[in-house]
Length: 470
Image (tube, rainbow, N blue to C red; front, side):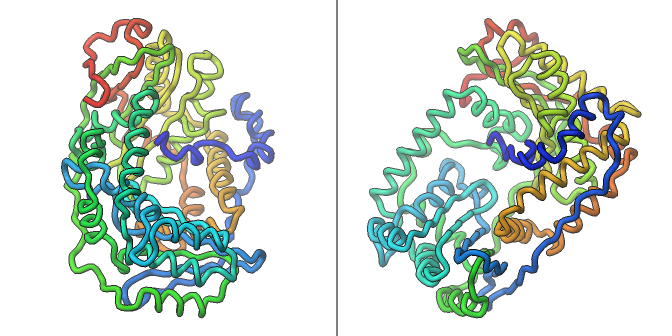
């Protein structure tokens, strides 16, 4: 990933509504007046668990004759067997492209196209995700195709070879991009290269994967009690429930629990790594472990991160390193709060000759934000507004409520999480910001990764030199 950047970037709506606040921020927050935090009005979402364990979330919206669906499956690349990394991703692609036992790929595509509908599938690190969109009158047909794909995938051999070539090409292109190399390799410095939270595939592994491997992975993880389906749009709830019950009839629950990954050992060790890459531009990351998703300090940490580098236009990193000093094309930070310990990092792209100056300034800003009194009340109020406005703008299309409610349910958040989110953001104090800055940011324990031309970067005493993919 450049991980999900939309969280860190202002929406156009926000920039328009808060241009005055932005000017105040740039002048030191002195003229910013406190305004009430925005309210969020979450529409009613009906929830139902079927007899086979499948969870169904329903959000009716009759404004347009369109229906969207979002389906999450409890699977992921976390469960790739050793030596077969990339298997989950290949399974996710082939689930959609490989046809079914009743319909070969060409027929499946033709029947979907005939009603102007769309189905997409993917498996990422922690979940499988399938989405569909169709007209109201075509929902019964699209649900039939969706659950046939889920229950009777064919994993066509020719399509498998095509997907393999696509994945190999994607890997090759990653190795041409310093930014993608850095994002891929940095977690290995923290977790270790064999950790399920950091490991990556190789061309040799992708070439070794077989249809039997894909089929075995599918059989191990696809069951109705591991599925959350959210549907939004113009539909009848009664008809939807009946249709899903019919299509999932006699689909057995999982017989065994999901494997539990080994817990992450959180270590604080400083170090420098250089990956030589001939290019004028260098990418650098510096960081250490973040924390876990349900940490009660989560909301203070999110705000602290936005102040530090989450908001590209007015954050500490953006204002000084990018705007004032002109040292970076782009710079931002992220404090990862994940299922196990996530990653806190600062990432920047700069001319290779400026890499060491960017590192030094980033470290200086990190140290400054930990000092008592560094963050003002006006600054904190601005970022509360910023965070909630950028979040709420994502729900302009109402169907995103259904999609995110399914994701929240997948991770175990309560049904009223969005309301709780606003309350918790509102309750964060300056004392909380100061406390978490001192507790969770550790400039003395930074791992540093630089991808670029050593001749342009200059000496990095004590740095370990690592080749791409090592």
